[in-house]
Image (cartoon, rainbow, N blue to C red; front, side, top):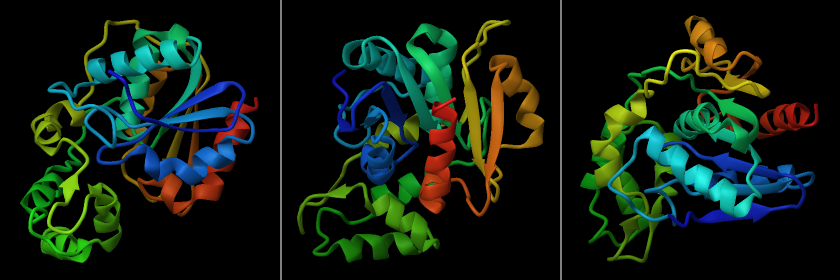
Length: 255
């Protein structure tokens, strides 16, 4: 699979994996800043952005696609940042092909099953009248009754492409909806499997995605894990506090 990528900077490779219904576009500013010291590649995950669609969307599949990307584009080894769904894919990659991962940054997610479903968002997007809407605002208005949070609607609207009367959603919403249980969960891995490289678990202080109860499972898989909370940030840490997020990543990468 030929994944779409936005690149910035030069130096040792750093791959960024976005979350569910995100895209590489969401990371443009941060990629530029991190590109001052690294060759940054923000990837559109499968079934997202400009990357190809597939009927598969579980974490072993995602990890295999990122592994192939790192082998083809990064000389076989890269630092990896993953947010939410992208963080789970990054963890799966590190656990199954650790030789490809120089170091790991996992953003506001743990290797556990969640109930924070995006299914209502996908349902609202699929129900929006994109084929007949004459303005982008018409599409957003159609989702307003289901999605009250204006910031969430704005985030989802970044996935809308096209012109009036022929808008389209960039993500493969049908496959993402069908794969929601896989995306919310985390695959079973063999007992004793772990990643020995440096790992930073960066979470939003106002988010409930990473809990103290997750510490044992995280340190079991990632014995060198370090934890850091970003004050004032929710689940979208990089969007809520971009300067603080970027500095935390720079500090970790420079150790």
